[in-house]
Each structure stands twice: as structure tokens, then as C-alpha cells.
Length: 373
Ligand SMILES: Nc1ncnc2c1ncn2[C@@H]1O[C@H](COP(=O)(O)OP(=O)(O)OP(=O)(O)O)[C@@H](O)[C@H]1O
Ligand SMILES: [Mg+2]
Image 1 (cartoon, rainbow, N blue to C red):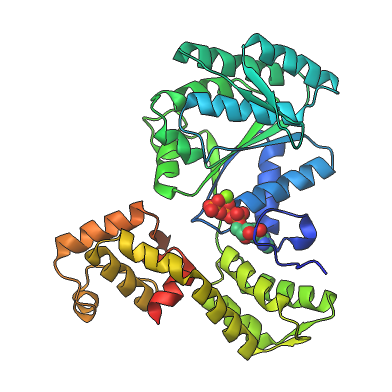
Image 2 (cartoon, rainbow, N blue to C red):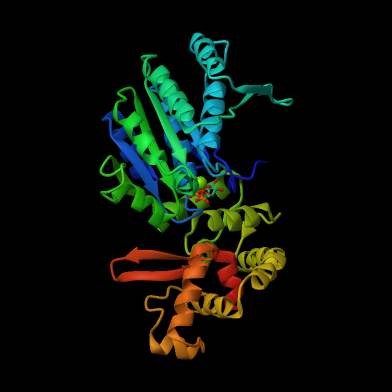
């Protein structure tokens, strides 16, 4: 029996909860020639949503979808390698487009290797000048544009381009993207400030060129029946009480909810009750303990104390408020500010906007629960 609660990847709509509105929104954007920016804190389900949208589009043969993960790229050369390799996989040489694509790529003098296991091509370039990269990018996009097919390209972890030593990446991409008619884009990423800066800063070239979608938590009225149904479809049961505890404990954060559900589903019991969930949560925290102790060594005492205080408090709206500072004995305003900045940079905590203001919370839900104890 397959565990229906995925903790990585995408396996089709059956294992995907809700996101109907967002899926519809992105597909409408694509159909109307509007590029989309997808933003959220980590592990909420951006990549899953892109996969889901692509599944639907390709299922209805509306367009060819190309997914590119920029997470590991450090510069424009890496960007090109990733882009070219993904395209070569998407359009294999057996097809006529693939043949033409390979012809074009070879003209750009790459190193082409074939993965020993999958037989798929891996393409890498060794550009010595930025102008070569720009030229190659332009040729690749022009080639795609001229195939007279609809193409959707998702650049995931797009904020990564801020790390590139080349400072004109945005401008180069913007200039190319502006002219394309047959290619739509999804830009996705999790460092909210960086992405918002790329797209909303009027001095920067991507200004006003896309529509932003902020991905939030899956609402309980969608998640509860989804969890229940997956147990029932596998001739198991889970109590309402158990489900609501899971969602409360994980604060409905998608990845953590999936992990806890995956664990309780793996128990041999036919019926899962609250006690089973407690046991699963304790197991999960215990398993992560080594990593959590490791964090402690990597942070200063000040940072660790601020982190612990935020975990204990839940969402902290006023981090410098006297009551909060005194309760946790956090020291001077300037040292708290420094710690908060460092923790945000290390992605240990995040800042989120809400109607009543912005708040800080611990990123990793399990770490947060462990620190509370
Ligand atoms: N709608 C969904 N229903 C069920 N599981 C989901 C859903 N969306 C995402 N998941 C699962 O949650 C986990 C996190 O999702 P995903 O990797 O898409 O998040 P992300 O926002 O891209 O995270 P990151 O910012 O770290 O890249 C994955 O294991 C994925 O399988
Ligand atoms: Mg992702």
C-alpha cells in the first residue's frame, strides 16, 4: 500500500490537496499572456503547485511545460547549463524539434555528456565572456519562440539570480522575455524580500511585468476532508480530533502536515486516535534532535535565546516590546535587532505580513515545537 501523504515531489492530482483557486489563476494567466510570480515562505507548496499546473496543462495538451530549478546555480553560466539541459531532456532528439534543438546547442559548443543511468543528456558550457552567454540565451529563446508551439517555462528559486556575480542578469532576461509571444513564464521563489524587490522595484527591469500570487496555507476546510478521505480510501480511519490536532500542531504548514500524516498513516493501527498523533509527533522531534543541537552550536547565545523566545511565544508581532523582552530576558534592543536580522538571513525565522501587522515566527515547525518544550 502506497503512503498517500507525499513528503517530496508530485504524483498527480490524487495526492494533491486543494489549490484549486491558485491553479485556475495561474492557468488563466498563461492563457492570457500574463506572466506569474509565485511567492511564499518555504515548504508551503510552490513547487508542488507548479507541478500541478503543469500536469493539468500537459494533460490537456495546451502547451509544453519546462520546469527549471535554479536553486543550485551560482552564475549565468550555471543558469545556461540548467536551462539547456532541461530543454534537451524535454525535447529529445527522437522528435524533430529535439533534432533542431540539439543542432543549435552543438553550435554553441557545449560539453555534452550522457547520464550513465538514465541516458539523458547533460549539457554544460564554459563561457569566457558575458556576451557569449547573452548571445546563447537569445538564440535559445528565439529558437523556442519560432517553433510555433505554446511553451510555459517555470524558473523556480528565481531569487537565486541575486547571488550571481553578473549584475545584468535581470536586464538581459527582461529584454529577451519582453519580445516573446509563444512563451509564458512562472517565476517562483521563497525569499520574499528579494523576489518582491526584483519585481516591484521600479529601478529594476522586471518592474510591472508579472502578476504576483502569494501562496498561503491550505485552509482547514480543505485539508481536513483530504486527510480523512485518504485514510478511508485505504480502509483506515482517523478521528476528527486527531486531524485537528495535527493541523494545529503543524500550524497547517504543508510540508510538516504531510510529514505527520505520513507517519501516522504508517502505523499499523486501523484507527488513528489522538494518542497515536502524540506518539508520531514525539518520534519526529526525537529523530531531529541531533540536527536541532547542531543549530545550537551554529548560533550565538543571543540568537539562540531570541529563537527560543519566538518559538515559545508563537507569532511575535512586536519583537522589541518590553513585556516580551523582559519575559525572556533578551537584553538590549540593538542586540535583539542584530539577532533577528541574523536569524532571518539564516532562514531560521521568517517575517510575514498579516492584516494586524507583521510578525516573526520560527521557520521549521518541528524545531519550533521542540524549542517550546
Ligand atoms: N497541495 C498539496 N497537497 C499535498 N501535499 C503537498 C501540496 N503542496 C505541497 N505538498 C507537499 O508539501 C511539501 C512541500 O511542498 P513544496 O516542495 O512544493 O514546497 P515549496 O514551497 O516549493 O518549498 P521550498 O520553498 O522549500 O522550495 C512537499 O513534500 C509536497 O509533496
Ligand atoms: Mg520549492
